[in-house]
Image (tube, rainbow, N blue to C red; front, side, top):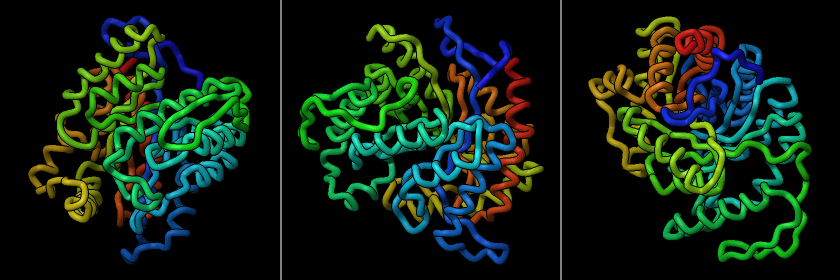
Length: 360
């Protein structure tokens, strides 16, 4: 992606390396509704996500990510397949996971799927790896939650070995060992970009730095500024491990409409319903209207409002967090496909240019 000098901000206060500003969109493939508020089929939801990714490319968004889920409300269980469909119809936008739950997957297969996507897209694939705050993949694929930490650490270690290229020799407890194994397909021009999604664990920040992966801060509630120490810890850890500086990104939910009032009215009832439905299994507090208004305000984690409101908040938090990438997690179960397409168009044509202007 080509950027002008004004499109750069510092990655950290004490770090002279500068990275280009990147603006992305993430979706979990929430089931959309028709004009009569009836849920669409899983197949139609997936086809709609492909159309949304194509539109994101057309309006100038830099990245389109799909998060992995395995439930009736989120049918995008094979994100890489949908991303390949998007890649085949676009020429510029980067495509990737947001996130891939590596703990319950096979690192070799993840590498093969995304190196294949990298080839199909002409070098536009990325991967955001995570342990998964949604745990539905663990029983589905036969993994024990008691092994949550060990699975992610060991599989991240193997994934890093695979990215280095060449025959791999590796031994661990979570899968069969590899002995001088050539893993295909080979990438044409070095490894594809890899990020570690972090929701609040300093150990995960240090892990990202140790393996030389970029840091994606998943901020879904509370004051974004509380993540600033993580950005600082990341750059310090990179230096300690003797690695070059790497970018920090932010992933946060939101919804954009023509006015603040319209965005709130469209998003709030859907947000309440979704959080209420997962509160028992995820431990989330059920939001009140008061807590919602705080979260969409200047010190909350939700980016809900008009293009100007959302742009101002993105610019403020990128600066506060020392980050150079922002991925808006758009969509909420029950919203219409048209509302999501409008969100994408406003983000690409109004929000992103305005943030660049504010940070110039």
